[in-house]
Amino acid sequence: KVEHGRPWVTLKLASSFDGRIATASGESRWITGPEARRVVHAERARHDAVMVGAGTARADDPDLTVRGMGEVPQPVRIVVSRLIDIPLMSRLARTARDIPVWICHGPDAGREICEAWEGLGAKLIRCDLNGRQIDPRSLLQELGEIGLTRVFCEGGGALAASLLGADLVDELLGFNAGIAIGAEGQPNIGALGLGRLAEAPRFHLRDVRQVGDDILHRWTRN
Image 1 (tube, rainbow, N blue to C red):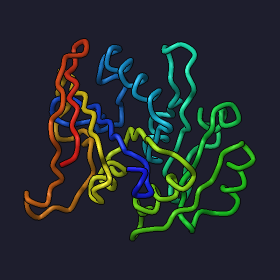
Image 2: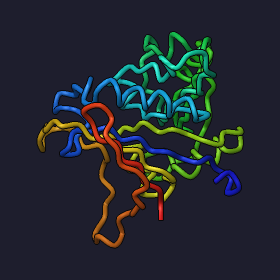
Image 3: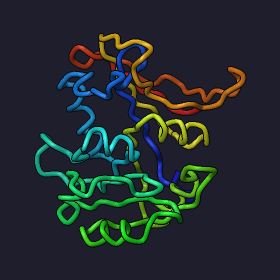
């Protein structure tokens, strides 16, 4: 997809079998087992960048690094956050000088928070807005112009919905665990605003296999 000016996008969704990524209180570690998490680390290693939304960065305080795979190059860690509302004491902030952190923000992000993150060593990338959120096409265009060719998106629900709604997901990587969380849990994909089933993005199933106690399914776009 680089010829279209944007990187290839793999969207990873790890959820309960009823499609939830966290309980109502936000607890999400760990829905899937260690074998599934090892596959995720391998996927991170074969991409240029790992990308999450601000909500995931706040809720999980992730490292977004490749671990347990030996000496491998670390992917760039990207957070999509219109107003850069990410804690300055987060793991990403504390390690930004060691492993690259890029923050894709809107034109209305405050100057002070921009300067604070730049002072920590992060690279800031200004993107256009589409309504109240960052335009996903602008986001990927910017990343493509910088030179990224493969981006591994790990959610959360709002960012996943934004990319799917704009038809920008090339590959879906789904993990389903044998656990039920219920309707009050947080969905793995946010609102898409669909009126008819024909409007829903569809993917071709490429692979299904058992990974530990979880199911891994891989899909590619039509």
